[in-house]
Image 1 (tube, rainbow, N blue to C red):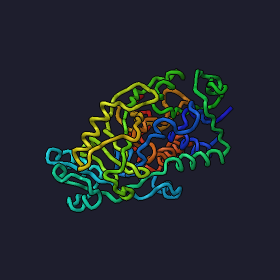
Image 2: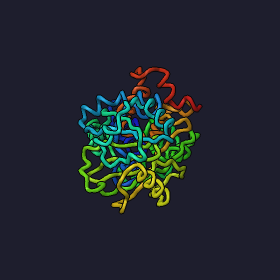
Image 3: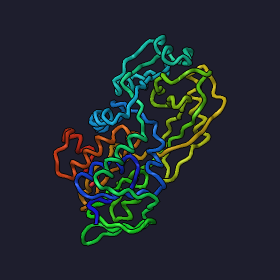
Image 4: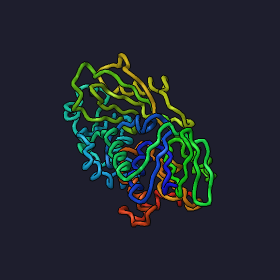
Length: 356
């Protein structure tokens, strides 16, 4: 009998395991062969503390010290670009992410392939970092295992039932029991809830496609910042000597092992090409991930008020990696009866109580 049984071994589940293992015995059940296979393994891996809703920003800020102590951050910077026709979108993004506008000369010094015939405005934030996602996952896993947690892979859940003492969960790796069940199943969180007899909250997975292309014109792009188009119509980010480009789409889909939509990817690459002077001549690779949101696009963290012993750790959307330390600590505080560090109004925006 475990104190906590966590379904899902992405960043949500493994960070929850690290925190909850200080409160009791923990087992993590992951359906794939390894941790962080789905959304967590396909993250853009950027820490920008002003990115997201107010509650997400609070979690980002609460995560910064952990990220620094775990040594998972490296300098990247974030640039926003736009044109005259995108003036309103550009201004809204600058205000939301608290960026500073810069001259086009300064923008071209940072990314020399920008097309000044199209791009006529730019903003920059030097306080954005790359996240070493594998190191972050392994840091949480090491903490969890150090506290006695068990991590079981190839453990797809096949049935969940209530018991007199908590929950019984059947998987392809065996049967498990726990006093409390933590639903950290990413795109499948509502599926898991229904299996447990818990009313789903209406989570929606949204597909996001990505392409890896060669460095434009053979430039050394290692020091280039990540760049967003106004309104997040596309983005590009250096990665291991190549450039990742995404159309930043949010197409509703059912939970599945996602793959890129070729037409959507082509449209996104065309938007990127309009902003630069170098055409895309070939792809090195393409893939997609699912960003899963609650109906109000805030994370959902904490015990379900209508179902004793059922705990949500869900709706990370595109913010899972950067917010994980703060989100998992809030989850542990709520479960352990400790006063959270973030303000009560923001806690209220994150707990499942708002949907019940």
